[in-house]
Length: 358
Image 1 (cartoon, rainbow, N blue to C red):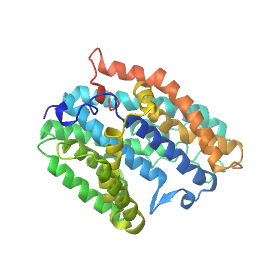
Image 2: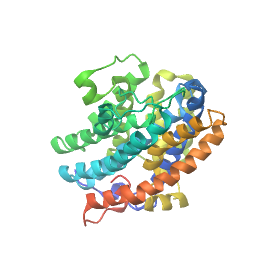
Image 3: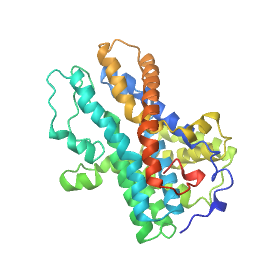
């Protein structure tokens, strides 16, 4: 299956969309969601919609967008080597720099008897393995060094899946199977009975419960792209989708994940492709801060709360952390991410609508 720009419409294949604004919104939502639990250790104090916390909804949004854009990227250029080179250089350089700073600059400042250990290797190799003890903020209710980065391992597993499916079967040919897989995975995730995993199974697939949800959301994003010839984005449908999204999240938690993917996904892509492009999106197309904010927000939040012995209002903590993370993200983008992406692309021109994914 090759890229067909006519199916996307004129705005979808230009930079005039709101994907960058949505990613910044989701990265900021993670910060505001985490502050209450960072200060108290009580996740129930985080903003919730039904069973889902604001940070979980934001991560769902990230995976929906990623599924759409990564599938679009592979559709535009299906060379497997180039695809994985772009994927690895988009994530690993910034992640490794972030983890080295956390482990060898921050950790000694917040742990009295910190000793570098080989336990940090899985963090670098597996993009934040959740099993590795990161409890280095002594005396804090949630002492993890950089809690949110565990999702990156699932993100990269999704990239591998796109590459394999695209090269072996062709994404267009299996779009019905991908949609079906999304429905099954999200239904299983909503039932909350999946067992745990360990050993090689964990290394390959991760936790079944986390994997079902995140693979399902990514597959839903893939489906929105692969079935884009059938999807009509309309303001009236978006209004109905909003009502269904709220009703299911609050009243029907068993099917909430499915509704988040279907109705929430529709809202995400309606906002990205139908709503007039925001000024923030024009900035985000040139300077993508969302990944850097996601990487640096937690260490900055934790450092502030640790230094003040948790005596700070969670809203103020969120605002200060967002400002600090944005500054750190700008340096990360300028010094690490943008050069790495340029190296990955070589001298080839990048299709405007795909730049964010690549």
